[in-house]
Structure formats: C-alpha cells, structure tokens
Image 1 (tube, helix red, strand yellow):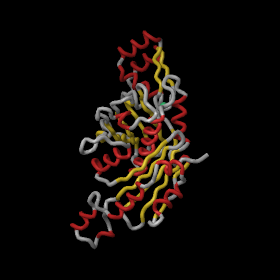
Image 2 (cartoon, protein in one colour):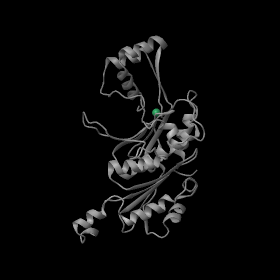
Image 3 (cartoon, helix red, strand yellow):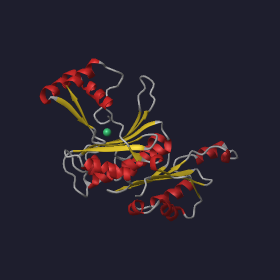
Length: 331
Ligand SMILES: [Zn+2]
C-alpha cells in the first residue's frame, strides 16, 4: 500500500517554500464510506475530482500555517453541488463531504457544479481548538469569480486568488484528484525579511516584498505550473521534484507519513449530535419523535448513525450541558 505523505521543501537562499501532498488511503476511505451510503450512493466523477482537490488543498494550507484547530475549506455552490467541505486538524487528520442535488454529467466543469449563476462562494474557516468563551472562528470568503467577474475554471485558481486577496501572499497551486489519489503542490513566496536584506535600503526591500515582483518566486511558479494533472496523480514525489526543479537547489525536510502524516478521522460524537438536536429546539424534536418514534442523525462525513429515542431526547433538553449548538454539516 502506498502511504499518504506530505513533503515540505525550501529553495536555498530564496524566499520561496513548497509542499507536496499525496492522499491515498484517507481519500479512498472517504470515497468508500460515501459509496456505502445507500441513500446517497457514490459521488459522481466530477464531484470526486472537486472534493479530492479540496481535501488536498486543505491539507496543504493547514500544514502551511500549522493552525492549532480545524481548518475548514468550504465551497457553497449555486448549482447541483450545494456544499462541499474538507476539514483538516492540526495533526493532519482529515475528513470531507459534499451535498449533491440532482444529476451531474461526467464531464461537468467547476462552474457547472457550483457557480452556475456566479453566486458560488469559497470560504476558509479557522476554528481554534481551545476557544475562550464567546470566541468566534475566523472566516474568509471569496466569490468564485475573478476581479473582472470572470468565472474561475479551476479550484486552484479560486484558492490562488483567495491567498492574494486575503493573505497578500503569492501562491501557486496545482491540484488533481481521481478515485485513488488526491494530490497537490503548493509553492509560496515568503515575506522577505531578516539578515539577508539588512544591506538593502528600506525602499528596495519593500519593493522586493511586493506581490508578483520576486523573480525567484516567479521562475519557480512557472516551473511548478508546468506539472500536469497526470504527472501529479501518477509520479512519486522524488520524480516530481526532480522533473520540475532539477536546476534549483531544493532543501527537503523529512516527509510526514503514516499517523504523523495526513490520515482519515472523523470528529463526530454522540455529544455533538445531541448539541445539534438541542439547537433544533424542543418543539421540532418532539415533532420528529411523534412522527417517527426516534430521532436518527447520520454523520455526513463518516456515515455513522446516531439514534435518540424519547428518553434520550428528554435528557438532552433537561440538562443543557455545555455543548454549543452544532450545525447540520459540522457535527
Ligand atoms: Zn462522523
């Protein structure tokens, strides 16, 4: 079995860093769980590609910023894909799901799935692990259109735009996914600062630091962008790095694999589902109980079923506990 792996590297003496992720087992696990759901069935191929690219991208962004909490990448669609979510924790455990309504042709493009009327949105949420009371997660949202209202054709274009707009960071992303592998390459320009620039005047330094103006970054970005979807899906990381950057001096770190690398895990729990039912309110919960005898909630991410009978439900509303109300999609 090929392990999922995350590789980080630097370009020696240049303000540029990079990362490659290849998700195999965690990705096929996500797809298999969905396929075994008798209500939804498997994802159509274009959704496999979109959700896989999102999962690879979310892993890269989480590993890049090392956020102590959940990084949640969401696409809110105005087409047949209503929502797609990829969530990655600080330990690189990850999960993903998508809500699909209606049929999706095998050759559907990004905009036909999530941006039919240019109303699609992409959001990145950072939800801290140890929240202080009243603390809200940070969320940045961008439309799925560029500065001239042109629809983005690829998820990587959306995310590059997001990084520029909300983080002021030059970022190059190459993403690809099929039903076996979800993979991504990230190249990012680091803000220029520190010893190497002490000799430069303040003005030159500021200029150097501007978006799009670093020659090293621009050259490496062009090289990175030449990586094709097929190469990213089929070649091993050593081969990819050699093929792209054989003329550059690449400093590599020890790859993260196995449990130290990206792996599947769902954070759903009976307590969190109970919190969600509490959020529904007692009236609605009692209506469901009267109609069906119990309240059954399935986790959208892992497929686990949670069942609450009338006694369980009474318990939920008797003791409010300290669980915040959940939302249907984040359990
Ligand atoms: Zn779950």
